[in-house]
Length: 300
Image: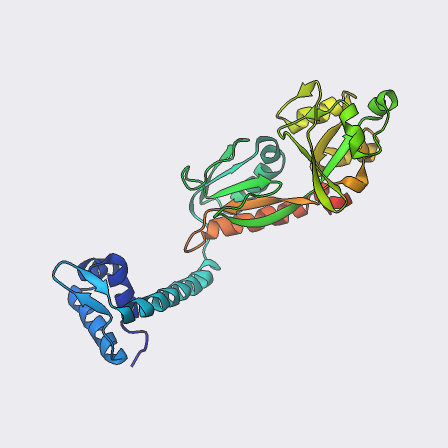
């Protein structure tokens, strides 16, 4: 006797609330489903379902048994899927989103290389600085920077991300170098997308509200203004590491640098994770790790 017999039919009946709809889902006859459930109840010596001409409902024993059976079947299906995915090339459409500047510079080239490896896959990329609702707007994957808000999304860390407070030597010669967080209020700050700059002070996070005569929602534009000596900036490592190495910028208040955050790949929760998403996330992680921007300094 196969101890799995009847479990799938029982779960399908409960989920469909009907023997006939369960039979349609399983592509068998209604009599087969009814017989398998009856044999299951006989083996268990317990009634699992109340049956009427209009309604199917769980008994108390059925409620307990259903929760266990549902998990068993899900884990069985996921086990089979994990093996078959090893031999299956990704196909179909994958919709993803990323921030404009970071997406153009880092994400899109890696996705393009991935597409060359899997030409049967279709990819749509929307570059936007708006935080998209992945579920309601139909996205399979998003690349997000910094700290994640608590959500129901599945997140995978694909690269580190460190923030640096910087200024050009010309600005520091003219206005002096800040030696503490309290001195930042006396400096012109080049403001990007965030209204606050995070720092670390006495082992805790400290948020500073920058003020200045310049603001733009582009990190590259903030960098250009800083290089021209217009003020202080706080930018991620991938913008400033090269200018720092060349001496075009000076790193400031290094003892107060905030803890490293990350670059994240996030996707909606699914009963069965999409193989194409998993493979692309792995490609992004490997691709970013191989870039010079992530192989030196604190970003190593």
